Image (cartoon, rainbow, N blue to C red):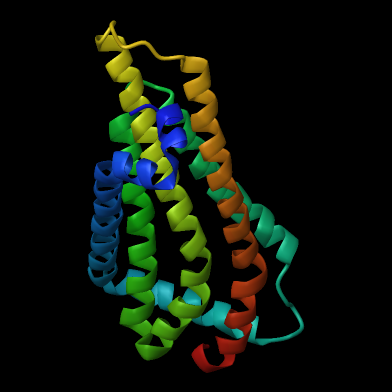
Length: 215
């Protein structure tokens, strides 16, 4: 089913047509999270000590009211990171060889998330779990679904290009398909902007609140 056909079918039709890709992409994220958590447990002692010292210093700094957090700077950095990943996924979708690279991007995102949460929980225990719940999870509740939709769309569009190339009988209006694909990517981009705002203005509030107890 093409992108324009999925749009005409509405949300239920879109989900039915993309269910296999969503399952595949979600599994990639989950596997990445698992491997990231395992990597956090396999750190060398000196690596663990350096990271613990870094996190402890960060918590102490955030617990002090004087320095505060430069929200606009954090927003720009978070927005750059999120939108760069989103742009990479979108760009891979318009290439015929983008399928394996999309899988790598999704796995890497899951790995980073799993490593971060795994390290915090392993080294800080319950305070680390609270920290992850209040500071790491909120922006990712928006960013991960947005990147998942982008990844599935990228895979779907790349596969559509492959089918069109090998099946000359398949007649598609590629400009319309491209616009539909880009529209969906832009919708996901708005979620990434919201995730960046949460990371810049909400997560630091929780970090400052938790800082004295974790530092």
